[in-house]
Image 1 (cartoon, one colour):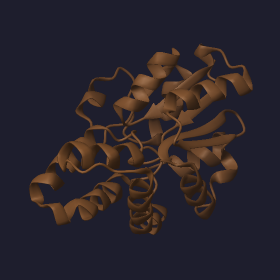
Image 2 (cartoon, helix red, strand yellow):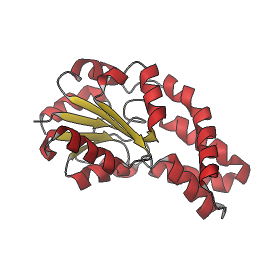
Image 3 (cartoon, rainbow, N blue to C red):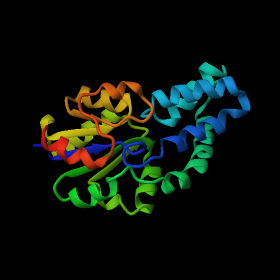
Image 4 (cartoon, helix red, strand yellow):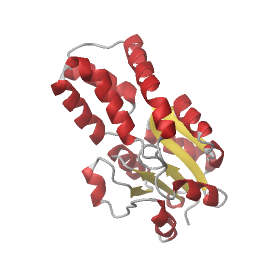
Length: 211
C-alpha cells in the first residue's frame, strides 16, 4: 500500500512550465535566436535539472563562455526575479489543490523539484499549500538524493512510495530508487510512453490505489 507520494512542482502541481521556458528565452535573447532555440529545446527536454547546471552548460557549450560561481548566482537571481510572481500566479493542475487538502492526512506528501529550495518554499507558503507537505526538497541536491533522504527519514519500503513527475529526471530518479513513477506529459514526449500516466489529479487517487 502506498504511504508516501513525492511530487515535482512545475507541470505537476501547477501549470508553470511555460513561465520558466519564457524566462530562459529572455535571459539568452541577447545572444541571438539560434542560441535561444537551443536553450529552449534543452530546457523543455530536461525539466528536472536545476537552473544552476543549465546556466553553466548553456554558457560553456553554446556560447563558449566559462561561468564561475558568481556568474551562475547572478543569472540565477535574474531568473528568479523574472519568474517568482508568475509561478505563484500560475493556476493549479485540475484537481491538485483539492487532492492535497483531502489526502494529506492519508498519505505523506513531499515535494522534490529542481527549483532552489528557498524559492519553492516561498512559492508553496504564498499559495498556502506548504502545510500539506511533510518535507520540501529543491536544488542544489538532485532528485535521487531527495528520494534517499525521504527513505532514510521515514523508513519507507520501496513499494510504499510513488513519484509523480513530468520529466525524465523524475522518472529516472524514481526508477533508480526502485519506486513507482506516475507521469504527466508537459514537454517531454518520452513521458507519453509511461505505463502510469495522468492528465490531471482527477485520476490520481484511482491509479495510486491500484498500484
